[in-house]
Length: 144
Image (cartoon, rainbow, N blue to C red):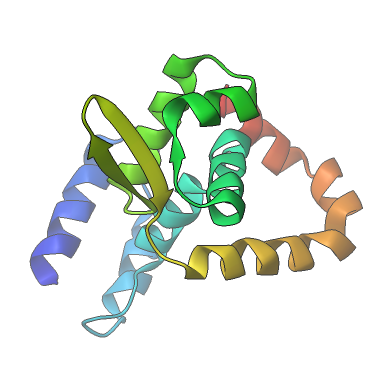
């Protein structure tokens, strides 16, 4: 665990959006096995794209889907869908099954459906505030 935190801190130092030293000190008080704030932020960042959320939602509702089916449902270019699937797979949120030359994707952890439901439940009463939040909007613009 200590090695993973060291690697994470090294990556943060190389990344242009490094955490302030104060955040790194906060992580130092976490016990081995805890999820650090920066790791949790990365996890939530993997979920912060509308297309990735739509992919996860489709996979939780429909089950395993072929890339072409996802492209059709999302009405997005295959390259863009594949890039989002690569992110979700790298983060361990989806798994892939190969059948010949085809790839089928499924949610890797069934708790993702509950997470998405909880996120909707939490966002619903705060929709107006979230929509008008300039900080979240600026983050969305940086993602495009």
